[in-house]
Image (cartoon, rainbow, N blue to C red; front, side, top):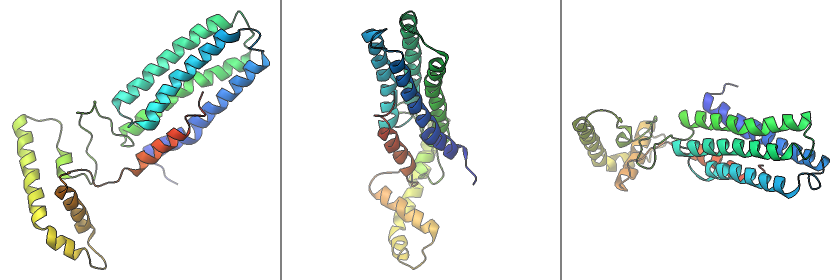
Length: 235
């Protein structure tokens, strides 16, 4: 089975990184139970753990509920840095009060590095089209195959060049709308032409005042639904 970069990154994120991260959290809980955390480091370490959970929970909520763009990737990275700083402060407090053996240290290494691996995979997904990277609301998204002419305008060039391209796209759309009745009638044939089917779909969007991409976005939506289902499991 041949996998492209986007699909491989998604599979690693869903079936390797997140499950191992959850398993590491359960192993860390077992280490705390074995070393009697309630009688040694006590409530302060527990409060540290809640803070660490809140930081990673914020990043996970952002990934699960919002479109993964440049701002979300920056938020996840900031949460990772804050998580590392809080972990350092927690260990400074905890080490003199209870033993932290080699196994628990290895568990901590997984819990610290797996969020960074997840961030790298999310950036890969965004860069390959699994989540369009935009610089804020007004940013330009990369063009994709099947996009409407208005969505394929390049980001560069002079203002006059962009105006000419918009005018050309408008003329193409007007010509397509003029042909709309014939296209719709021909679509009722047993085997419609795929190009005509795409044109009819685009006509429907133009008539609604929307020059949007034709390709569906179900992959990103299913990915976000899956992320949301993991929120209650992550530590």
